[in-house]
Length: 531
Image 1: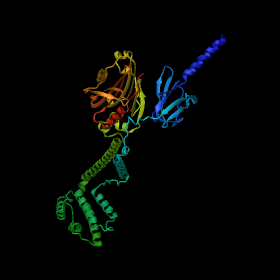
Image 2 (image 1 turned 90 degrees about the vertical axis):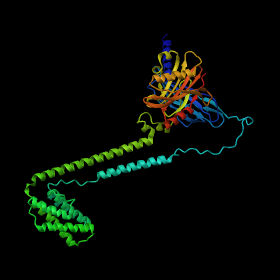
Image 3 (image 1 turned 120 degrees about the horizontal axis):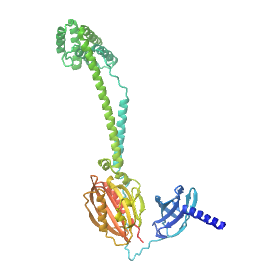
Image 4 (image 1 turned 120 degrees about the vertical axis):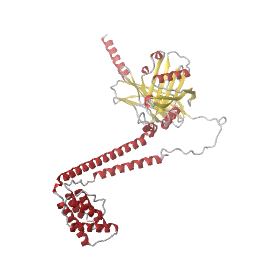
């Protein structure tokens, strides 16, 4: 009795281990034409904690692996079911064996079953099939056919980078700090010293030297004595100085005013008559300007303290405003450059439609240009090529309860949503009672469901549709409004063995990239015939 009980317990343990980790091997057909695809399926049942590694390689025996599909995971009560599919082919006729393949369960191999397959030639009846001449070579569109767009994008980016570098270099250059002078005399004497350090005379720039020399004198007279010296001619300035000296009781000698007038007239000749004074004359004029400024400063009455303080304050406020304005200009320039750079990069990578749409939804340009995936969804299976793997949805959350009461099994897979302005939905439905379906009524039911989800102003058109295999269905298409956006939609419906297979695609109206995505997906649709 104890021995029987022990054997029974041992058998239970063995069964639990076998159930916990099992490997099932299937193939869609054992006979196929040259170049056609055999679909090999490895189905694994294992605990969630088990690490499963499926075989990899370019060849399984004599057959070439042309596609390794993503792993489909189905969660059970206590275990996971992992389904891995491979697309195999052979371009020579004959009988071949798919060898036993190792699947690693926590690094421990369990081997699949070996399968014999047959590859046969395609028979051509030349009596019934007409023979035609070889067609001319068709030029294939190159991936970089629009090379000028890429070149334009690269040049634009390079220009923006150079502009940013130039602005950065300019910003990093050490700036000469603005000097705040305590009085007009201090400013004038300092500028005279800076003028000598520029060495304009040594460079032969006599005109520039006289221009700066007389500007220093005129600036001082305007700021200290408060007469319009900058806009006045030489004669007007001397007359104004004489009037100001009498009004403010400034003791100025005739020699001081005549010396200033002589230097100003000499500067006029240099600037306008291209006169070239001698070196000693230039030095004498420099000394006269400095002496005149000092004499004027001494002659100004001492009661100018308040005006001097006011002048200093105004100078300081002016410099602060100037500095603040320069900072704002720099910040605005850098911000504008960064914004332009980011905007250009997004347009090049994601497309202008994505930017035009307010950066909302999916970038259809990015989806169109990335690597696509061909997968099998639902039961009976729908094969379709999509830019992203479709994710399984809970049909109970979408379909009303009264409708679910009639359904035996419903599987839904989707990417995106109608509110994201781009969506793909694939669904397969098996009903409890096998009945003949009216696809037009099924289309109306789908339209009503979409309207319940917020779609408005739906325009519906209908026509017949056939797959390349010859399976007939209907196609509903038209426009709708969702989340304030005009959209274009297409719905394919097929009925097999009383079941329903449905593909729905919707995108922004006028989006050329989305139109290309829709055409490619609809052209790739294949249906597995129901038993």
